Amino acid sequence: MLNSLQKRGFITRAEGTADKRSKPVRLTAKGRTLAERVMADVLKHGDKMILGGLSDSDIERATRLLHKLLAALEPANG
Image (cartoon, rainbow, N blue to C red; front, side, top):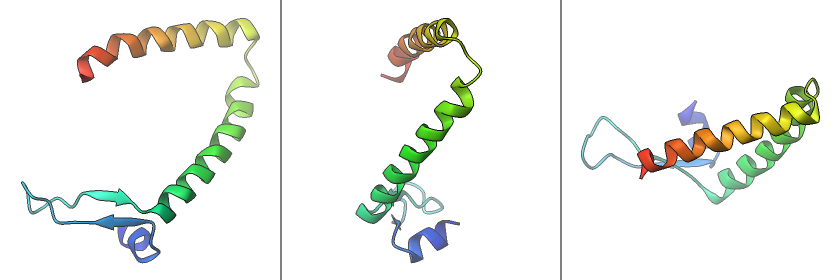
């Protein structure tokens, strides 16, 4: 998959500096443009699938809980 993305110009890969077995992957400008477009579509349609069966109260409660979880995880990630 990575070879295909690289051939199509969506990513670049370099040799790992600390570990020669790893190859860090980086999105190119073309890859970022595609990722942003695709994510917009996913978010647009995901909202319909995920939120379609939830009431406003359910969404509000889930949002509060996710914010609480994120706040608890952020200090651990530095």
